[in-house]
Amino acid sequence: MSINQSAAWRTLITAVHPHPSVKINHGATFLVTDQAGSVPLGSAGEYGLYSADTRFVSRHELRLNGRRPDSVASVRISFRHARWHMIADSIAGPGGDMREARVAVTVDRLISLQQMHEDLVLETYARAPVTVLLEVALESDFADLFEVRYKSWQRRADLNTWWLGPNSLESRYQNADFVRRCLIRAPNRTKGITYANGALRIPADLVPGEKWKICLQYDLLTSDDDMPKLAERCPFEQGEVDPLTQARAWQVSVSQIEPADIRLQFAYERAIEDLAALRLHEQETSSHRWMPAAGLPWFMALFGRDSLIASIQALVAQPAVALGTLENLARWQSDVDDPERDAEPGKIPHELRVGEWAHFGLIPHRPYYGTADATPLYLLLLAEHFRWHGDAGALGPFRQAAVRCLEWIDRHGDRDGDGFQEYAPRTPRGYRNQGWRDAHDGVMDETGAFPEPPIGTCEMQAYVYGAKMNMAPLFEAWGDAATATRLRREAFELRRKFNDTFWVDGQLAFVLDGRKRPVRTVTSNPGHCLWMGILLPARVGVAP
Image (cartoon, rainbow, N blue to C red; front, side):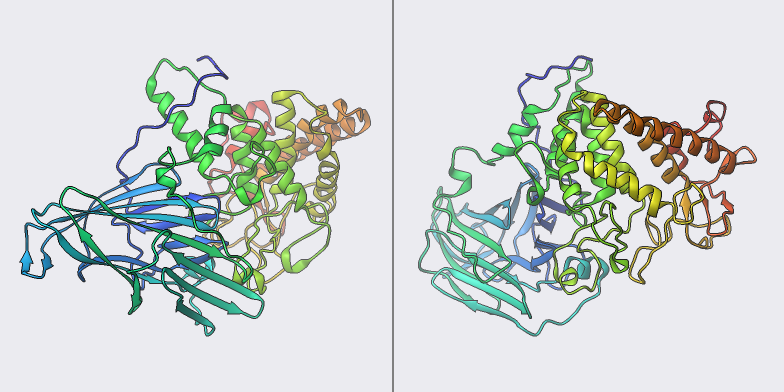
């Protein structure tokens, strides 16, 4: 396999979307619909148009003369752009039922930061002109993303919708100083649209052989001061169907491969586009230095562990992503001891949220620091960047953050001074499990019971070993040989203690519980120990 940094980027082959839902996004603004392109009324699922951890559109359904058109196909053209094809039979005209007056509907949606653009195109296959009534049923519940995710609904009193006319609909929600507004407008159309019974009503005069089109612009606003301009031109008419200039520029900058098997080429290109879709534009520091989110739809936010591991894996493609992640997480590195957020000085955050629940402290994600592994993973990413590219000077701005990470590991990560890392939430709202397996039931003993905290997982020890061993060369490059020597000494001592304590009867223990008893539940966590090299060589081949 050869690497060619100058190879031109190719547009991926478009495929019909097979998933039950269709998801498109730009940063933390995203749309989730069913395959027909609808956000059904009263849906308990993930459907909706979201931004800033808020669902701005909770219903979006199209009707022609009172009936929903039938879905034909949905196509995800890029991570920002999707298209739906529909057909409506039996369109009733003035002369009664006209079965030959079949109407085709094409819907294009393009997501931008805090905005969605929608094109609705109608065509008739009748032999004579026909008039239809296009209705767009809309609702905005402004639910917090955590409400939707956990189906924990709350009633909202101060929620109103106004028809501003002649082409504008606004919904607004306020709770004390928390404001969300959804503004829906039709650029370049000043008459003919009305609003009644929760739906925009748009008469369409269809002529055989001609396309009828209307554009709608959805602005998702977080204050009363915002009033975005209407688009002067339709984005789909500006020479490029899906303007992804910034994303394409980054994609061209990544390492290019020339494998013998073209299927590997397609897999790599798809992986690069998927990584670009996770770009957190809200957190970026430059066109190339940016931070990946943890996943769509629930995790389009700053995430310590997930973003760090993704950035380590992306070093082969583009090292600047690692720099963006390091910059952002250093900005949020804790300066305080705050038990309500599981925060301690030097700790790297777990998750940052900006929705209503976080705003009013219903969840501690402002940010929340309940992760025991993000801090050593920060050091691992920093060290891996140096190992790949060898430029200690470029990493100099992160030296102080690295020193503070090491201080947290020794002072707070090791809660009882036994040389191992442990975690336990310090707030009732905190996460029970704060390592790789952070689900509520992710850490259980051999009987299916929860181990007594504090918990020390095997991979946490491996991360600290790897962080100290791999940061030593970087500190030497920074001219600090004493720190490098100390880190290697501490890493060797941790490795010795780890193999003495975690290796039990020919098997690697999953965790040490609060009484320092090894839990031998079989999990995938020991794989991280193989990655870090903390196991003695003779035990590598038998580790579960």
